[in-house]
Length: 110
Image (tube, rainbow, N blue to C red; front, side):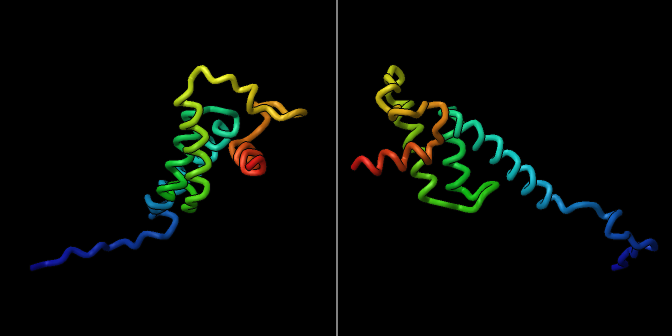
């Protein structure tokens, strides 16, 4: 069987960026976008961030953060008419607290 050999050699620049690097970069940017939304009380984004932490998609796997983001989002999804003022501590506003801050405050009250 004859093998065809290329008569030209491609430089590294001509080869381009490997697809895995492009996908990883897109995943990191996607994670950052969803994390920003999640920290601004977007429940859907909180669930997505939790799943991204679980899968290690765009971020290192972190089971503690999986629990934090998905638990808070699940809580608010299960009780759509919840009066969130019950979760606002004196001197703070709900929209200024990230899920991580909320989780810390909840654990401190136990």
